[in-house]
Length: 283
Image (cartoon, rainbow, N blue to C red; front, side, top):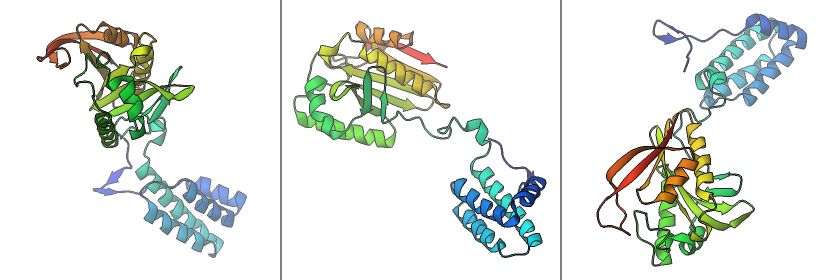
């Protein structure tokens, strides 16, 4: 990111375009120009520059009562301060105007839509539908790292953990709903960022298997992650016998990258780690 030039170890304030400002004064009048400076301060307020902004606004107000020649010099100085504050907080804005999250960690949106589905952050009130739909189903949880829930209390506790994980930014668990019937939960997706990459997991209600739900949602999530300037890799893994999940990853645009021995532990089918396939999509 660019910065203002330095001189002898100290920051130098950039000079305003004096000729342009003087022309503007001649056309609009000095008092109108002073009012424009104050309005600009409000519209272009840079984050973290409240003290400087307050000082400039106060001086701009005082300048209204000065003789025209002194008003010109004062306003030139105020414009320079305004430019400086804006430069500090938003240097090279034109380069990053479409990358607001440039300096921020990747986060999955709390709500987004695909062609057919609405995906939204898990909330505690979703627990009953999650428990009935898949958390208690031994077939849906067959290739997971945890056993099916026997009581609703377990799902409620899991929903609370999901809330904490989302707040911390360590994982983004979300439920998949029918786009035109948001109360109908048909599955779940998890996005787990780690540095420059994001990994994924998902569950689909058994009566909706084969509808292409997971591949549609994962494709959207992968494309969204790779559009972030700090994410260069997306990945997911599955048991070597889980052909359905492998097809989901392929349809989502991922390619098989590796065969991993003794990689995943699935307590519902084995007491020892099992082999897995690793799929990825990078940019």
